[in-house]
Image 1 (tube, helix red, strand yellow):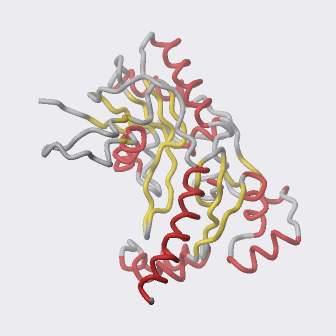
Image 2 (image 1 turned 90 degrees about the horizontal axis):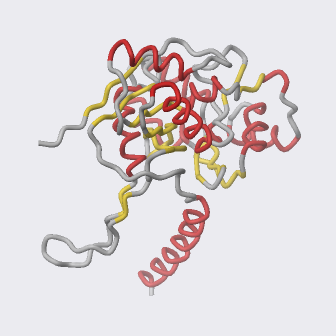
Length: 284
């Protein structure tokens, strides 16, 4: 019987510049020492804090463009400025307008949820380092007062540095995945934004199914699947479990997350074109 385990670790409140690998190794040594083949999944927030990827809101220069976008979307103009500095903005999603009813239905505290919607009426769809994300990963939550946290400058490089530090300290060969939450429909899903020591994609495209039919699927986003499973322990608010160790999964070694931004952008354009033709055929 194959067994796959996910174990969460509280490494304490991380401040800018903290050594998260030292904290991780202290916590795992006491509770569950790392083994060869383990996958260490870490939230991007604590990696960013350790790398001091923060911005003081008061130090941000806001342009007329940022104010116009802020007025249209309801996003804080200083946040808009940082988002444009960090990424290419492709569009906007009116979250409060299209998802309010469903989001409030699932709210733990309707009053707090209402306040959160008022603060985040819209999200910007952005492309950063070849990946699509919302608001370029810029985040006020769980950040020092008056500061925004940015995604790691190069999450693949960060994952590699953490993996190499773990191996140097313990002699253990592990994989490292850095996770960040993204909007999916009316909720969020944690996905891999950086990885090292694991092939992010397990490809079996072109195989055949149980009835010998050619199968379109077979390209499994392993790093994303591991990250999504880990998110059940991360939580999204005050759980303080930013590290999960996954044990028992067989995987191929590899480096980096796939560059999907250009592919998705082309796909969106072609999907819109095909949908337009489809609707025309329906009418005529």
